[in-house]
Amino acid sequence: MRAREFIPDVQRVLDDRVEPAYRLEQAYRALCSGLVRDWEEVSALPKSLRAALSAEVPAAVLELAHIWRANDGTRKYLFRTHDGDLIETVMIPERSRRTVCISTQVGCPMGCTFCATGTLGIKRSLNAREIAEQAFVVTRDIAPERLTNVVVMGMGEPFLNYNQTLLALKVLNDADGFSLAARSIAVSTSGLVDKIRRFADEPEQFHLAISLHTPFEKERKMIMPVASRYSIPELMSAAAYYVEHTRRKLFFEYTLLADVNDQQRHVEALAELLDHPLYHLNLLRFNWTDTGFVATSKSAAKKFLHYARELGLSATLRPSRGKDIEAACGQLAVRGLRGQPQRAAVPFAQSSPT
Ligand code: SF4
Image (cartoon, rainbow, N blue to C red; front, side, top):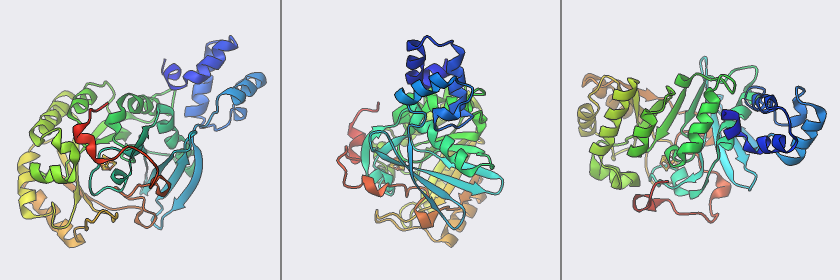
């Protein structure tokens, strides 16, 4: 069933040739766990079928255009889609973990003012195959090491591309597919409350992170246009729904911006807002983008963390990775996309979510 949704084009070729039903599963496994990028690599399929598939449907939908390697081991991948769009993916090594950060859209319409991707606007959403294949390619690249985690925190707002993102994650989690534990997969949203509730009702145990960035309504509207559509009380009501229904930890992402959201009053308001045993505050230092914001100093970020913990918050300060290749959080902005015609970033607050 999953295979049929994931590779409908392969199914069509098999139907035309009146192939037995198990051929679809063989093709699906070859892509998801065999990580093949060329049908000729699939020896389980008869030669004539491999030739027919090669002629009609490509095994790889993304062309790997470039890999950058950072001093800390982080790698950034540039992919070109079949229609010439460019997207980026990041692999972050950390002790025994190998995490891939994948993209769900070409650009992003959310317009968060501190985010390089947000300055691009949106070109289009990726399909499930394009989303999942980023993890397949990275897995091939880092072999024999294994990918341990997938985070959907790259380019785009995943909940604006809900169905295709979910299908990709189900394939990554599928025991007959990529076979990664659901708890090793996390999605980050800028805060689309209706989709947070829908995600809470999904049967898979995927993790969720919500970008909060300030506990104050007025400030949030200034740095995140989505806040004009959904207020903080609406967001927190969806957050409460999520933890009540899943009993899973819920992460709140908070990028520290100097003199914007890094003061004592912010910690105190956060302590009230995030007063729940399943809420966790993830602090990040701002990574430079040409958006005019400045990073909170390391010492001020540590102070913020200590005060948050003193006030009873479960909180962590996450290290920045891959800064020298612009692969850190908020820095993904394919240079080739700049200047291309696409829909603008900021009007999300006045538009309808898809
Ligand atoms: S932070 Fe995320 S949601 Fe906001 S503009 Fe950047 S990619 Fe889009």
